[in-house]
Structures are given as C-alpha cells and as structure tokens.
Image 1 (spheres, rainbow, N blue to C red):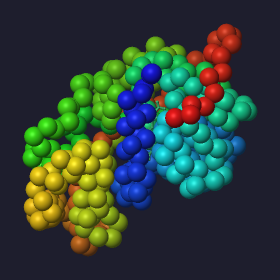
Image 2 (spheres, rainbow, N blue to C red; image 1 turned 135 degrees about the vertical axis):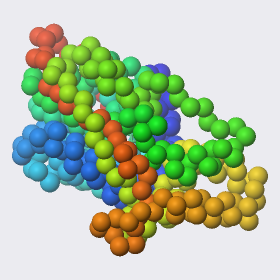
Image 3 (tube, helix red, strand yellow; image 1 turned 60 degrees about the horizontal axis):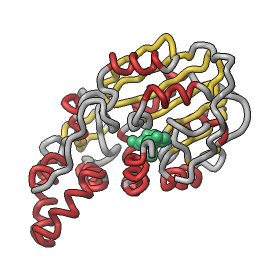
Image 4 (cartoon, protein in one colour; image 1 turned 30 degrees about the vertical axis):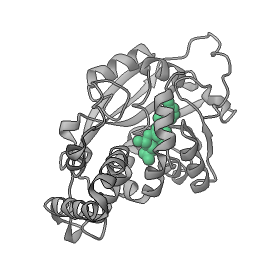
Length: 306
Ligand SMILES: C[S@@+](CC[C@H](N)C(=O)[O-])C[C@H]1O[C@@H](n2cnc3c(N)ncnc32)[C@H](O)[C@@H]1O
C-alpha cells in the first residue's frame, strides 16, 4: 500500500511527538510564524493543514479567524489534534491518495499549510496533484521542510552519540527518500511542484536558532527529544538491555555533559540554552496553483481508516 511504511512509523512513533508537543512548539515557533506569514492567512479562509500532527497550525489558523481542517495519516496524531483543537475539523487521511475534501465537505481550500508534514510521500508529484485538486484556483500552498542534515545539528546533537554505540544502527535514508530531509534540494521541490501543476514556486531558506527551553538551559528538554524520537527509541531498545540500568544511567549523564557543551548565552535567557543548529534551517515553499482543469476530481476515496 502507498505510504504504508510512513503510516506505520507515524502511528508507532507519534507518542514521542505528542508527549513533547510543548517543547517542539517552543523550538519551532520561528518556523510556525514563517509558515503562517508565507500563507498570508486571513479571516474566513478555508485552510488545509497537511500532516497536522498535534495541531499547532490549526490553532494558528483559528487565531487569525480562518477555518482550519487538519489531515494526518496517523490516528494517534489525529486524536491528539482533535482533543487539543476541538474547533478544527481533523481527520485521518493520506494526503497523497485520499479525497481531502471528504474529510470536511464544503468549499475547496483557499490555503494549504504544513509544518514538516509533507516530506513523507512515496510520490510527491502525485501527492501535490491530489492536494491541488482540493484547492480553489489561486489558492496558496506554504510549507516548511528541512534542508540537508549537514546543515541541521538538531538532527544529530546527542543522537549521533547514541547511534554510534549501536551495533545495528538504522540505515540512513538516501537523498529524496521519504523522510524529514526528502525535500532538501530546492531544485527537486521546484520539479515536483511544477509537475503537480503549482505555479510561481518560491523556495526560500530560513535560518533559526534551535533552542529547547524558554527559561532553563534546555539540557533535559533536548535529552527528552533525543530519546523520544524514532532513532532514540530504537537506540534505547538496543543499548539499555546491553548496558544495564547503571550503564544506561551513566550514558545519559554523558549525553547531558555533551549537551551542556552546546549551552550558549541566550539573549532572552540569562542561564543560556542548548543551541542545536545556529544555522539550522528549512525551506518554505509557497505558491499559487494554476487554475484547475475542468476535469472532474478523482473519485471519492474517503478518509483512511489508518
Ligand atoms: C514531523 S511531523 C509534523 C507534525 C506537525 N505538522 C507539527 O509540526 O507538529 C509529520 C507529520 O506528517 C504526518 N504524515 C506523514 N505522511 C503523511 C501522509 N501521507 N498524509 C498525511 N499526513 C502524513 C505524520 O503522521 C506526522 O504527524
């Protein structure tokens, strides 16, 4: 089945994202603002959030008086977003294949937004064609995606130490393979958005400071993220039994010490904060689709049962 691996990953791995939603929302606040600004959200617009996760952008849309609809392939994420943002319509759907208007029957969408929720498709051209078919002519698409891992220490700080200790570390996905870095090449983003019928594509880098706490040094928060993400959970499952409880606790202390070496003075925080990726960044692609063809939309697929 299309996107089956990601459906499983994001169903099994959603808990770490849901439990740590506040840390992510603080850390990625600059990204949230960038997506909202690029989308030029306005009251009354119908806004579709792809891979809505726990609903941060749904809240942002409500804040400006827009009408948000969130879709996500993970039932765990959809349950979390529904509970957190009861005023939004949220449904389980694969944005590549499902009829996105079936989640929230009504007019086509004026805006499509996503914070890191669009890099997981088996076929990005098919996905963005499907997304476009749910949009009003002239609608705008704005999303954030990651640049290359070499530019993003937020993917490696602390994590590499754990993975290096594993005898059987998870394989590194190849370039363009579905995953966080799939859209790291702007030319690729232009290629599939153009092929999917989106026009005036603009991919712009955004550098932001990746801090993990507003009022502390962020060491525990960063450690929580390292252990909560898929790589950390896999590493813990392998290393903890091997090292025993004492060895595991010692390793966590080593990790804390490593993270402390990344604490810098923060303007807003006297105690300093962990800084993973001063130049950490992503691209925001935003765009307006060409007018839709007069062909009927593809047959209703209905929301996926996940
Ligand atoms: C990195 S998380 C981002 C979540 C949220 N947008 C945020 O910023 O907090 C990626 C999200 O994309 C969702 N996702 C992955 N593939 C998808 C697909 N084919 N259709 C819809 N959602 C998908 C995942 O379930 C997950 O919730």
